[in-house]
Length: 573
Image 1 (tube, one colour):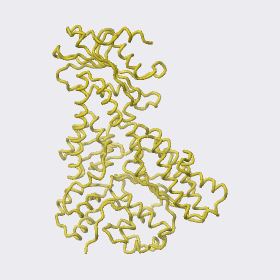
Image 2 (cartoon, rainbow, N blue to C red):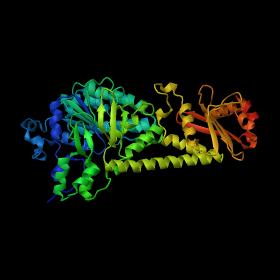
Image 3 (cartoon, one colour):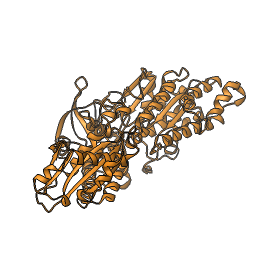
């Protein structure tokens, strides 16, 4: 009788004690342990068994499961006497950042602190508190939901010390989905702050911690060492191009075909076309485990992986990318390959400025695979991973571009109708949901030097550039200066429009409303509407707008030139 399939189960104990479908990957424990590496970061796409693997490691080493050797009997790890003697002998600290998906920095750190406090509460039932010194008790009690940042950053370091002082072996630390809060931070504009916090946390936990046996970290992306992993010299990064643990995550073809035989499924060539194609290091013919389990459960071919998670980050990068990005995406969807410069290390501040950044995310997410790569030159030849990836990409990209086109149309309609309320609502919503903190920063600039005019100027220009009824120009001469954007109507009956962008100056401007006023003043005083007059466009048909920005905050003001009270506006200080 074939085993029951339970899609989404990430508990090793549940799978084994109920004899549910499980593919033996315990060889990873042997390879990892024998490697002797202090701190290992493993990156793999979503739903590739990373959480289940960490749970398997925890169950194997933790003294809490010392009497559960039955869970490992019959598995590869149990064939080795050395590891039979290690089972249940080393404490394990398991931390997951999977659910830390907050909209702001304070909420994210609050959730991290709660996660750490829960750990302390859990181990308080294991420790003999009478063995603690007064100083140790004070530190242990200081870990609360509202603890200071310093206490949180050093909490795991101290927890390891407590294990040793209680007579246990030095513990193993497992950290799952370390990069989930970073993706959310970048999406919501607080990445710098969170990187600073996590750098201190990682440094204390993994570098200056002398009471740790070793550590294993998993995630999707390889965040550059220059950020949270700065000065962590004992870190070994195992990315998708590394030759370590190549068949430990995902299913090999042999494992997939054996599973199909167990469930009486015979269409192996079709399954291979849909779910094969992942390449880790030199190991080819790796199948998507999430999709294979879905297929075994439902017994029909379908794109299961696409429903497991979304990647709005990639969608934003594609939609905001230049023509080259869009052309290369089309080539990939046609089944062709592209050659690009690609860095597997992710630096969030470079996502819009560094060549190949988008393809780094594509590859880390599993949508594309490398056919060839040169780590020295960072030149990669990539193609879509398999038919499932191609279908998911086609569906997601069409959705992303539809949403972008719909949003674009709403803004254009409100602009041409002079609907200021709609323009402000639309621009405010788009800055919250689409723009990122680094969209408005110059590459290499600090927070204090951020100047968002260039980005917003380009963004608005991109929204209106396809208006066929206008001749659109940017940074042109008119009157006594250079306007930002001008829409010259081909028909005199259409509105003529000039737009000026201004960054908020906090020292001289009270708020964004004042910044808008200064933008409108500039249009008036420099007589930017001169070109309209030269084309015999009446004042009643000329519209002027000031766009004011402060980071991601935006306000738009203006309207019909003839209806603006210029005298009152010019008298304002």
